[in-house]
Amino acid sequence: MRHTITLALLVAGLIACKEVGTAPRVDTKAVFLGSPEEELKPTIWDTGDTTVTNEDRLEIFEPHIRGIGGGYIGVGSIQNFTLAAWARSDYIWLMDFTRVVVATNKVHIAFLKRLATPQEHRAMWNKKTSAAAADKIIEEEFAGSPEIPFIKESYRKASPYLMITFGFLDKLTKKRPYKFWLNDQEQYDYLKKLALDNRIRALKGNLNGDITVRGIGEAARKMGVPVRILYFSNAEEYFHGYKEAFRKSFGSLPVDEKSLVLRTISFNRGKFRWAEDSHLSTDRGFHYSLQPAQHFQEQLKLEKVDVRDFYKTAFIDPKEYGLSYLGPLADKKRQEK
Image (cartoon, rainbow, N blue to C red; front, side):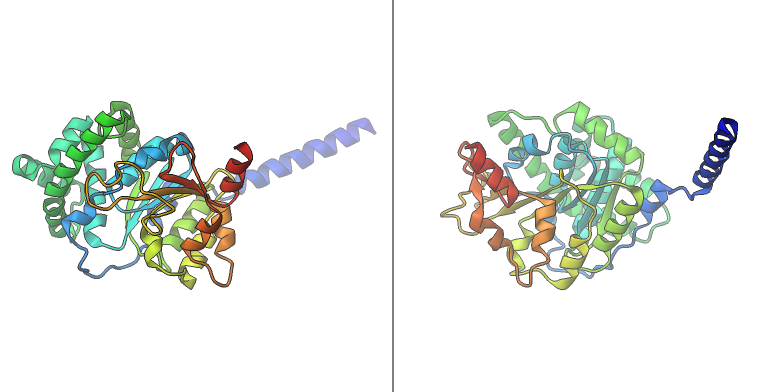
């Protein structure tokens, strides 16, 4: 009887192994690179100044996202590389509704693949000395693409603004010493490896669109990659409520208990003070915030909700007045106090 049972278990195990062996394997690379994106029309924001960040205190986020891994979704340009390197993101989806920002992100990725150091990367953005070399990289990376002329044009638009931004970043990192991908070889190497492994994408997409974000979510789910960081900059304060497409797209992203929404705000400055030196590069500063992504998704299910609603119960960090915690994070911080 024992032999019969053993034989039955062995046969069952072999059948199970066969079933597992025949299950279709996910081509992670193809899924990551294959998600759809929206078509963008020219806008008044297709200018060089949109390719840089004026959020001068991003290092406030660093201790909270350090090594969080997973997937990264962010709008804007250069600041995303900074945040993703700190987070050690496994896959990076960059998106924006301005064509020049998307093109500039593509150039950053191309430079990462071919340049060895942060210093070389910064120097390559100086169109006065490096335009010919940059054009060669663009032609190699995007060979056969009809977008090459526009990408070259975007490089030239971004160049002077990035050179100025590099100077501001040097001042900031001198006053508050911290490392980021353009002054630290190890972080640059990390992003370089992701770029060479084709794990960074620059996509055309509107936060309120119904294609790009939804496609990212479907891809991340198929890949088994939780989206750990959602970076909105201060875009939400212009929405005055979330549209249905936004609710559906961001409400269905695969997130977990480690996932965070990173945003900046400039409204209600009397209560939510701008972080010190957050207006170094411009005359406008920002308040920085962290919100659990799962809580964010729960709030998106409400009939009416606006980003300002999240701040009704916010907890402002007693040691850093330019940072606040939202949702369950606020409750946790109050208990710790």
